Image 1 (cartoon, rainbow, N blue to C red):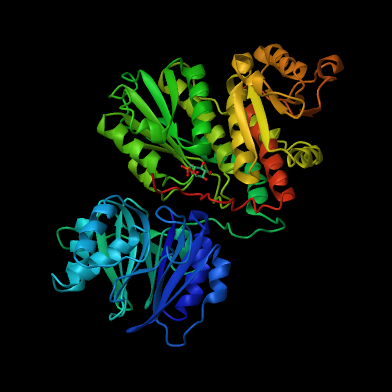
Image 2 (cartoon, rainbow, N blue to C red; image 1 turned 45 degrees about the horizontal axis):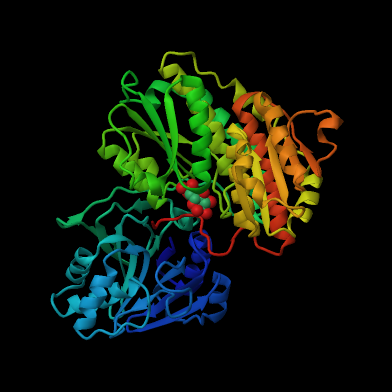
Length: 594
Ligand code: G6P
């Protein structure tokens, strides 16, 4: 994870701080910048959010360039010593890094043997010391950097300063890095959102590329020599205005309906054959959905939707497991990678593995300039717009909508029926955020719990998983999910009079079974919160502690109307506990490390 930024131009500290704030979604446990001019670089660091760093920075009038970093700790606790930038012993080389150096322990041992002393627990400090080491072995900064990069195993996006030179070096391997220019000013960043208002074009660095930027321009190199990279047009939605909202999480939940509209507009005119060009559907025998966190929950529901509509065997997999499990994949397999960011390291590794084994790959992704989008054979955008809050909300709902569309598209490709997106139109027309006051009341009750249980069957179970994750992420309540039918196989032993059991019951075919399971838990003293879209007889619900009734719509898209209330409940539970729902402790939005 982590976010890096670099800037050449006037007032670099101010610009670096502003841009780091935009990258905070990548980590916010500590931050630092190195700014100044040739032979006059100053370093500032602080623990916590960028606003803490901002208070410590003393701007220098003659400062002309700098690099900055916002950290999500991987090696060493989040304190000032481990915060980036990191330095060589002679303080000549200054480095910020996003990624993980897998062979850092071996390199550290070797360098220690040569007399180098280390002050931090980070893998990044090894890079600074290696630069110093190769300075004694070879001439010219670019050669020194090339030798250093060749010694590294793992992932990195790097911003490097040589304190004796005017400008910034950079390098990229498996962690995102972009660079843009505006006249004599240059900006380096982990995300192109930093370029908004700065440049109209940017360069997306491919893996293995490094280079140097100063006020005269940017030079790119690869293993062969100087290379050329074509610029891309910067095309970004407006996103960073909270409007009337206090937090991005709530704002983003309320953007769900417009995301559904965007999806409908985009997919209504789609050429299905073109989307899946190169795929031999006659060969496809199985479909695997792969993702992490919230996106994995979308995979669970996607697998159900596609299997229902196509009859093809489908399965959902957590990317970090999938990549090491030697999954059964060949040319007869469609592998669908789902991700908001398109930069999640495990999901990208799963993509590579699927491609190596000959599968046709489909990326269902929000960020259109992401590595996942570029790497997959086919791409289905989820059209949710920029999502800032760490807990994913509108992006998950948009993934569910696109998965229903995907299922329809596949049904057409497999010759079962013509794709029909009417369900999405109905969802849009009937979109309902529900009774928010009742959600607030429930949030008030839930905030005093340190554990919750959620149960459901089929699709309801998947939604319960995601609801549970939202509560965990934003409210720090230990919330567990069980298949309703599994209660009697162990879970009932956990129940007493203090236990809240939230029962998801939005599917007619298993409604009565699920209500029976709720009764089993209630009989052991549990307080039942029933979550349903059906009008039930009073006799069926009178013993329950609380009932939430939501709008009913046909088919799988009911799941969108089911998750939105839980996103709102999680938000209000978080706020009532005094937590910032946009930045839960220890988490980050884009997880670019394993
Ligand atoms: C992190 C985020 C989650 C997200 C997961 C997968 O853990 O905190 O909100 O669901 O990564 O991210 P992706 O960008 O691949 O959807």
